[in-house]
Image (tube, rainbow, N blue to C red):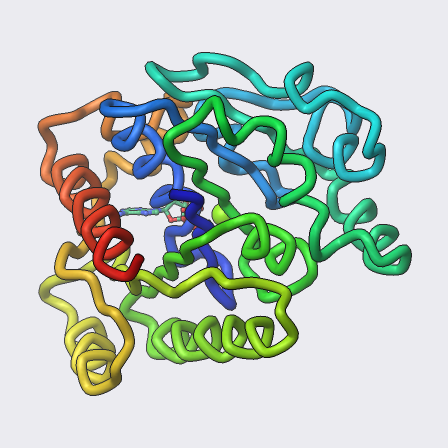
Length: 254
Ligand SMILES: Nc1ncnc2c1ncn2[C@@H]1O[C@H](COP(=O)(O)OP(=O)(O)O)[C@@H](O)[C@H]1O
Ligand SMILES: [Mg+2]
């Protein structure tokens, strides 16, 4: 599976979801985590920061001759390698867009690596811009995340429309395999309303909800996803169950 985690806005729990899913999938196979967000938060979730453009996805996108294996950080967690981002990725994305290399850019960078991995998990910036498009075009499946904020439910519909549009232009065949509820506040009225609204659509809502937990930001500080720092906590168990939901949905839609 090559899974891009997307949303039309930031702060919905994408990076935390991508990091934890990657770590869970790495329990049973080799995983490459790809940070396609110039804010480089996925790398930071594993304590990885690249020092320069050339030490990151940005340099690989810019220079088709560069060797992706020299940039991949190996074994940042058990079974898990990581291709880091760098703040320069934003400008590289703009330049590549003007040169016509953005849509297929990440797909091209990853191609020589794919045989080494069972799964690739791509984290994206909280928008539906060019870098997100590039990540989606490198993926065969998309997961989107929403929270109890009513705007984020609308975001799930925006991701669907975005995928449909790029399918029409033959930029991608990636399918939306799941809509996951993150930062779930089970007492919250807004959360229940948002969930109710999504249940009334034909979007592929996943059963597992990720609860709000202080352990998630604490794990970021500790530079390890919560499924590694506190594997038996409720939130870690939810991420583990979500990974199973994602794999089932992926297999069902193949
Ligand atoms: N389940 C959770 N419980 C509590 N805080 C969370 C949870 N998931 C994410 N967060 C926090 O919310 C903020 C946004 O999450 P993040 O994963 O970075 O979202 P995004 O990548 O969509 O911007 C971060 O500070 C993160 O630590
Ligand atoms: Mg993020």
